[in-house]
Image (cartoon, rainbow, N blue to C red):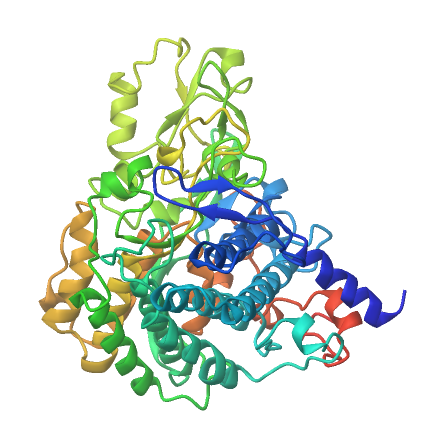
Length: 587
């Protein structure tokens, strides 16, 4: 097969994806598949325009989450997340070109979404019988989704090709060169989001549908883009502190060499200016981040707030005002049900025991960032469970962690450790077992039926809490520690029952910067942010290598400069004549 024909075949395949209509929060997904190449059943109406847009949303399922590829490229490669070696064996251990293709799906999935959005824009613009406001909103959603995809791509791959129209419309299949990072931001991502934030419905508008993006979503992402540029372009040498270190030491315990876990140590890193961001002014982009995030918080783009902790991770809270953008799912559905929840939450059998997976969690160093009373570990971590076979074989149960109040509760057999099914006691990790981590309950609390292989766990792409922390970060970078910046930080903390920080304790910008980055690691854990935060702050290599090469489950954490960017998929190199070499280190 000739090079051009291979590319045409791949692009055509990406378009042969069925669509679905998202409606209300009570019935988010209504199955109405249709062919996006010859959509003969799409009428020239508001409903027809909406079908095109929801087809773009559908790409999140079909091209990214359906087969379990996502959110691996978002979550696995960072310092605070670990789990079973077999789960992390390739991508999560630094082999971004492994045979499982976990890095490649970020490229192919996001470009599929961009192409679908371009087709939708073209078709919607042809429609004559769509009301003006509905048409503006539909186009705005497409602009946002394109910008969101490009934002992931430019952070993951650096310079990237840009497609302003679909490949069908352009006729350009085989010669699409990479555009420099600065241009991707200034000529594509930022203009798209500026337009989208003023086109999409606010969540207070009658036309807004819960579960869809709203004006604050676009404005919030724009603030995040500005903050990313602000931190990435900041000069080399600026400092930031991370609590880290080797996860364990080997000690002789009763005659046996045993892994003994360590506590994280505050370690100050000097940041590197991120390649490709040198032409930007850090202060200017932080000023823009501060203004836009402030507008979102001030209500210019609708009514949003930090919702009660118990609400945001509940079934009824999936479309609350805090969730600005997230994957909308359906329990048991082949297309709209998600697989990642098995790894993050475990799958239950009829007896309520874990009989599948529960293999991805946060490390002890992450857990020790919190106070015990903080809801994000008190309620947000799975503290006891029973694994089928490995626990039931001896009549026991598992718990985490084996210190603090949870250990005391185990010893006193206080609820929930009074489970009558546990007849021989409880066990916790004593030797670095991959079965014991701080497993999140964020997603399990949302799930209607955890016995299903495909669940209705909604993965959040952007939350209002993220925007509040961006505001705190930008305020600090512009003006140093102020009541305004610390108050924003404390808004997120006190929502989760954490003790507020005192302004007097932040004697300089660096200390507050470090506290905000740490809060992001706590608040946004397993939501696809940690790697990108380390990258944009220019401390990814330092933070990863501070672990000493390996985590407690024996996953490889050593990283080199080639890991700063993902490799471009080999098939793209073969089919796109505009790209003749891969990212450094991935040839």
